[in-house]
Image (cartoon, rainbow, N blue to C red; front, side, top):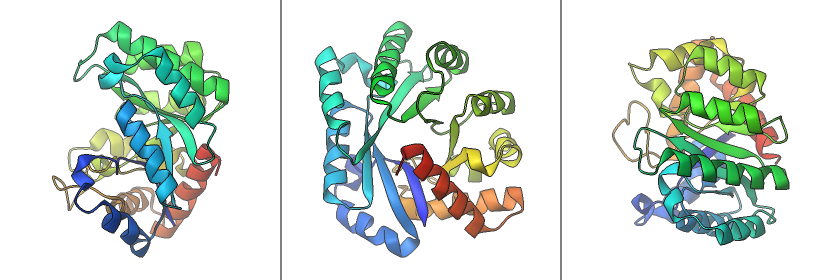
Length: 254
């Protein structure tokens, strides 16, 4: 079944019908969801969701736009949560120079601090990197040596960089952007990297694929991404779903 490796069902966009959406996903062929923290409050809600729903797992971490709120005691709370069997990863963490909400040095400090926590606990890592390709690569090459699985969430960089990340053993998270008409660079990446390096994600409620672009996204729409991957690679939809689920389970050690 489909494995959505990156969702935000804790978001207020689902406040009116969260349970209805989540309990309907199996009808759409979605078997597993990882709900990913982006702030301390979002991380708390993610853990709570994974405790409420059998098929939902959680990740805890603070997005680069939110690192201004982080304190060292928050690392202790994350460490405690990461001992729980359904809290499967650190994320989403990284660098974001597009919004530039927080200073680059502060972003780097907390990216590395959260990365250290993941290394200490040998937990998978979900990386956010936007308009920060060179610094992300530099920090990872200096601080990551294959200790735990990693995924580049919402991959948006070049084919060359995709090859570098593959050499480092990282997975690439592919979502709704792949279905957009102007996503030529991403389509080239998906065509040329092995399916064994790809995991499916929604980033819902954001990034809804065609034909639902602009609407609230949810895991039921991930099938459009799987269909586009199958088309680009000349394989079946079923092959895409089977292999990406296998990849996700290996990445999250489930």
